[in-house]
Length: 116
Length: 113
Image (cartoon, rainbow over all chains, first blue to last red; front, side, top):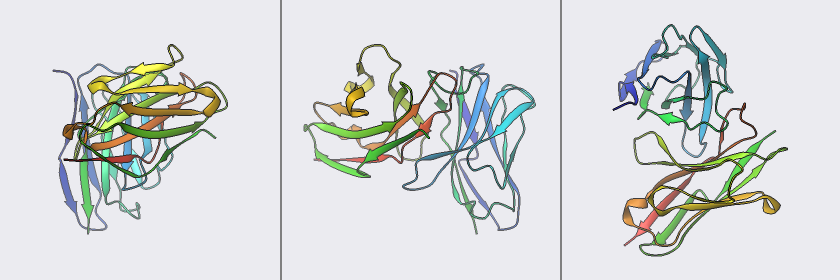
């Protein structure tokens, strides 16, 4: 079955360390996204990519970095510059290369990151 | 700027009762509208979407939503709640086919036995 795989499900890191969250999709979708979810705040867009080797900042990109070397993969690095990294991170993809609109977003099951 | 407002961060209904989750949007052009559902510790999945066809949109699991332009609303309803409907529900808007999807802050639905 096609879908999005995020790993690991739970991640614990010490403050000051960079950490990379994995996101892989086998839906052959062009567009991929990273969202951050905090209680009571809904989803906020961190980064998105419409094609391989290209990505754009979302609303809260500071302290994060991404790469898109392969169509199937869109890893997110949470750097030590991110002041409040503890959150639930969701990866999504869409067949719509324009980035949303009428396209349905397909989500992974998320990675819960805790930084202490 | 486009935005979406969900009224009520938590809604509780009895099993078998009507479910009504409210969503209002602001958009300068006719938008695309979505409802997504999230079960605990999972990602979101699409319930239904409005893309300027019929104003009453039917989705999965017996849910439906009605687009009312005059009220800038897209409320989600289900005639009879089931225990399995307990989840968080997100309304989302996209002003055009080339725009990013903007999510509301979510409404947590609880079902009382």
